[in-house]
Structures are given as C-alpha cells and as structure tokens.
Length: 319
Ligand SMILES: N[C@@H](CCC(=O)N[C@@H](CS)C(=O)NCC(=O)O)C(=O)O
Image (cartoon, rainbow, N blue to C red; front, side, top):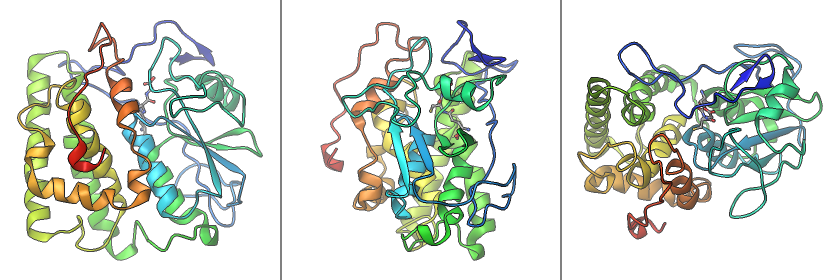
C-alpha cells in the first residue's frame, strides 16, 4: 500500500480485519464526478467536463468492481469516448502491474508499470491501497474517481449526449428501490463472498457464508417470481452489480472463498438470468474466466502454491 505517496513493502492482499476477524474493505479516496458541463457532482470538485478522448479507465478483468464499470461503459455506448487499460490478473508484491499479452495491456496513457504509480502521480502524498477501477483525466493528469459505484453513475449520466447507448441504468422513478437493493446485495453477496474468503476466524466465515446463501436464495425466488431482470424488464445498474458476482461464483468463490453450500449452477432462476445477461455483448465481452481464475488463485494467502484449478466446466454458459 501507499504511505505518504511511497509504496511500502508490507502490502498484503487482505485489505483489513476487524476485531472479530471479519474482512474490511478500504473506502475509496478520489470521488470527483465527470458531468456534462463540468459542474461538481454529488461529491468532490467540479472541472471534469464530459469530453471524448479525455478520460481513461484502468481495470482488472478479475475484479468485480472494475468489471461493473466496463459493462456500463459498453452499455452506454462509451467505448469510443473512454479508453481502457487492463492490468495483469495477478496481484504481485507491488500490486497491480501492466503488461501486454493474454488479455492485459500496457498503460498507453501514462506508461506506468504499476497501478500505484498513478495514485502517486495524482497525489504525491497519497495513503492507502492502489485499487482498480480508476477513472483518469488525461488532460489534468489526475484521478477523477476510484469508486466503481460512482463510475457506474458517471457513465450512466455524466457524459450526456456523448453516451449513445439508449438504456438508463439509474432511472429516477426506480432510484430509491435501486439504492435499497444495491445496499442489500452489497454486504451479503458482492462483499459477502470476500468476507467469507478472507475471514480469519471460523465465526466470521460462518456469518458471511450464511449471508451469501441467504442472498442467493432470496434472489433466486425474486427472479423466479418476478424476472426476467431484477426490476422486471428494465435493465439497471443493480443487474450489473449482481452479474459481476454471479459470473465469478463457480470459478472462484465456490472453491477459493469456501462459499460451497451450492454452486451457482444449482440455482435455476439465477442461471437463466446469467444466460439472459450473457446474450448482451456488453456483459459477455467483459468476462475473462482465464483472468478471473488466474487472478483469484494467485492470492498466496489463500492458495500458497498458486495452482489454478482446471475446472469448473462453464460450457453451459458458453464460457
Ligand atoms: N471501493 C472500490 C473497491 C475496489 C477494490 O477493492 N478493488 C480491488 C480488486 S477487486 C483492488 O484493486 N485491490 C488491490 C489492493 O487491495 O491492493 C470500488 O468498488 O471501486
């Protein structure tokens, strides 16, 4: 992690632990918004007006939070407006690293070797972890935002007419329901799998495991009774936020994170839902099972020998 702008060697893949051995995720530190006229957004400062070619997105394909933003970028028709760099899937001693090949890229904008260099460039005294995603302002040479939930909303409405996709991922009439469902899914499922995987006590693991499967059971019923999507026929940001966790479940969370009461492929409505979303290139094209498996199974604290499993067979999903 970074302390006063310098990379420290005590970096650990486990972000933090509470008094009961529960996993704690660091909060994001850059919270500015791109807006159509450059005015400030709900948090942060103004000065980040929408413009084609001005912003760059740094992602890891293993990372569910970064993948959310990639899906939104495609759904909103922003692929030619916001460019992308992809780090290698393995988190090494200096965190995320760039490098051309096997689905990863160099950093064509800043020429960085490690993602943490961008954090220091944005703030020479930065503290904390160098996480993906990062939305970078090429003109000002700084980080606009490193919180995927914000970047989803920036892509939905911050680019105004530059966004040609005709879907509204956060429509006003559904906003309170979307917020409520996001807030319900996040601790139980999106972050719940991490809380199970990185728990350092049996009690913290069991609590997280219970929450994960309670959430999956509830969502299975919701989709069976009221699908095809979480809000009927309207595709929203909550579908993106759920998809990124479901698509990683059998490949990573079932085994490595010990979320193994059932596989996702044992849930019929959730599988039908995954199939439905994977029919859209904006979802399918952002999924790399290769990066997901190599990335998660490279976490030495959980898998010391780094052996990447050959299974599971995901051919039912065309993956
Ligand atoms: N709040 C952030 C969380 C992002 C996050 O935790 N990303 C992980 C990868 S999945 C990361 O980059 N970790 C690097 C590290 O912890 O050093 C978001 O949703 O954007």
